[in-house]
Length: 217
Length: 256
Image (tube, rainbow over all chains, first blue to last red; front, side, top):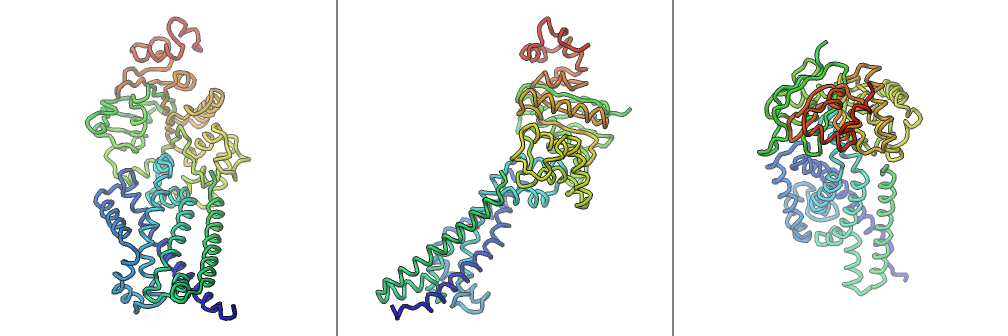
């Protein structure tokens, strides 16, 4: 056990954390407005716009159709433009965020759509603007679902980040492949899986507690 | 005194089919109007034309001397702030406390937090829920929720209160107490009220004037007494009979 690569395990965990954390943050910041736009421009939304709605839906579907491993390689030129390099942990954040944004947008869209139309009407009836409807009705009423959906997105990102080894991003998935698959060190693979199980559990537990806290129904 | 509502030749179509057609009526300031009719008669559409939630295809709606038809959404928002509305299913925001719900119209109007809370507590006092300010709507009974809805609708001192089947989800006792509250508000502040209902009883207990709506048109328009004593339309007679007011004993049950 003396040659067990604890340092590597720790470093790779930090890399996974960095990839999932940054890509998660970006997908939330871009995905929530995208979801709001999808809902608002829908046929029963607060700003119906058939053309914009179809364009957004088509864009979201298109990005979600591309397998992540292909997206990872396909966006290399864009990654180079944004990060300055196409290799390393930061470079993997770009494709991860690109894949997670439409994913989260669709999940958030479902939660926002489930908000009772009567509540929107009530705020319209009191003279509320569309911004007020978003701020005081849609987001607070959908918040538990928006939080749970974000946890689902983060867990999916952990899985996707395992493929990021392709662009030299490191991370736990990459570690498992290097030691476990290439060098037959099964104990490293088991350790990686154990760390991931605990990581996902902590995320899910925190998310569930937060969602329950904000659910007043 | 001028009328609070003047509607003339109002028509609203959904597709080809008109939901309400060629509606004209007026309501005197300070009066309570009940619009009754079966489901699908067009009550809800008509009510929503009164605050611009529905845009009529033709005709005009004048509220408190101001024509609201043909206005932009921005102008309509300003007008709606002076018209309160309550709903069958209360439509309280589950993520906000009772006090936050009541004062939301004030928040949208940019009133300071301190002033909002002062006014909110006053309103909750009036509807008898002063001790529930910090609770969330899910912990209230139906009658309490509708009281919160009423307090919210009154928070900006409206000139008119619209009630969309406001008692239809409540049991008979609670219905009575909510109607009593509405009547008290009507008397105390001289607030004009329009309520839509399919229950003849509700109309009888609270309304000064009754409109009977059938298939999108007005089949009868008169004082509550005249309609209960002497219904001229077949629709009104049928609804009165269904509610147990007809045939011969109708006048016996009416307060004279």
